[in-house]
Image (cartoon, rainbow, N blue to C red):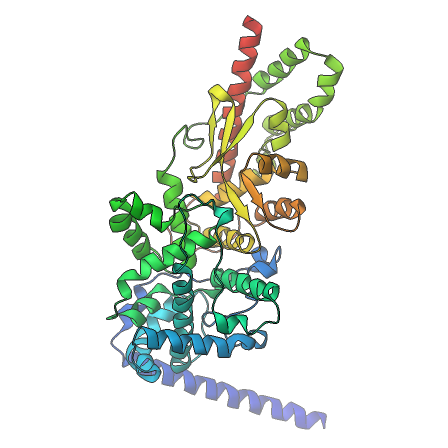
Length: 498
């Protein structure tokens, strides 16, 4: 029996190898007969499987729960419950915008796009040309259907981000669930799924499906209206842009952002980043040399103690004094990058020495206004969808090594500010955080989790090579500390003069 198995195994291996080689030869022969090789190089890799170093901290944030878009999760059995609903929505939107029949769309539009589609993904897709074309057509139409539903919501200019309503998908979707709460939960999970990095549909697919239709020119607007409703950071409503007649945005920035984007998550990333870069006023924290002044900090504390009850203030500042000595030990002892990473003071520590917090609804990067000792921070809404979206935005930035890594910088600073739930409460009271998660502990865990993978990721073609994101975050933190130090030092000098 043992000899039979031993003899049979090599024969089976040889047979399987020959079949694989034959299949490979056939595939190569077919490829060499094609004249569309250039299409494979028109799009950089932009859709990634999230590495375990990032996924393990929060696997539910990167794994679709309701709907698969694209090939990475399409054949997961637990996602097949919505397949009939997805097919019916795809058929509905196809009829509404008067597209050709499905088989004709597959043969004339999607199959010729095969190499370009495959080039968008970082892993080899073990699915044939025909199946890939059908997946992209059905999932692309379903995404267009969802965008159109969200675009119908009228967003008043006066509403804040946390006040924006998410629409119900449609009557057919509501009938699938026994109660409204279950329906809303399913809708929120579908929204989250559409913005997961592994669940993206390349924009080249949407453009090809809609080419020659009346809706193709409206696609950037549909995408923008969707992002206004789901972005963790406030984006100006489209109606506001029309009201103020923002020609530069409507005719220039929005189409340009769309052309620069490769999928929906990338589009949202650029929208937030572009508004972050161009709006607001005040001093930029990053962009200047940093040099933490420990002496100024210590003297400021001593000056404060001399004016009030010494024991009370020593207790009040004990944590901050400990923090100063920790930084001092780092500065005097050369070590690795991880050891030299400066810890930003928590919100409660900064509040104790008079620093105030104000929200920036324009998403301007961090600013510290010294005359009023005010730290301005981007306002953010955290809920069941934005929690997932924020993680995928940071993961997208880390994996693609985009330069500069602004979301990683943001996560690093917020991680330092929110050491405990007490710090979360301070930022909530300042209207910087609107927390719709189940607890404040989840907010602390959310931002602490980012620091575990901020320096990891694989290089890609989507962005130019850049230094390690941790270096950027170190500079960011040091410069914020520098601004706070300047405030400390100037306050101490005034007290001495008095």
